[in-house]
Image (cartoon, rainbow, N blue to C red; front, side, top):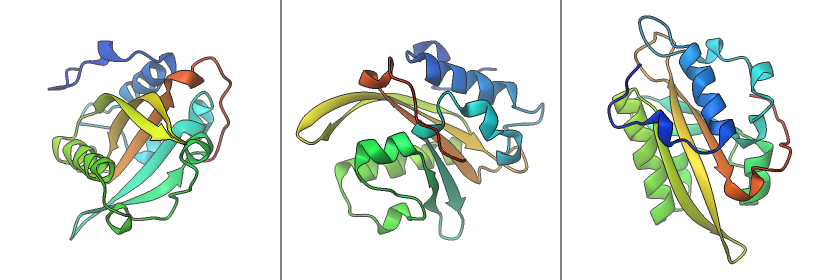
Amino acid sequence: MQYDGFDPSAIVDPRVRRLFSYWQERCRNDGIPSRRDIDPLDLGFILGNLLLIDVLAAPRRFRVRLHGANAVQRAGYDLTGKIYDDLPRSEFHDLVLKSFAAVTDGCRPKHAFRNRIFDGRNYHYESLILPLAKDGKTVDMLLVCICYADEMARPQTTGAV
């Protein structure tokens, strides 16, 4: 399957590549998978690095349904239950909202490499945002993974999706 503006061969982290393959295998003939098509038991290899984001309509907002344990530990806070619009504004915040909107509107994955400063240190990470839709077409949820380069050799903590 081809995705305009998205090149799966650019994915570096094997966990991110495996997640994308898993998502792609669950794509239906008529569109993208739904949350129901994703089994958390299949995602133990990356579960702690996942966020599950509800796409709310009228007005469109993004609510964090799940903030995986590794992501929480890295960030130092838990976004579970929070709505992105209610969080403090920053350049990073605006980038996240723009990325979520692009995946929601385009109904296609978004992959990126980014840098983020935690505790005064710069960390490089790879992210993948995958659309989910009950009807296969209208994005109502996002499956997001964030994998830091310094985690590639370490075992991952799991959490529930």
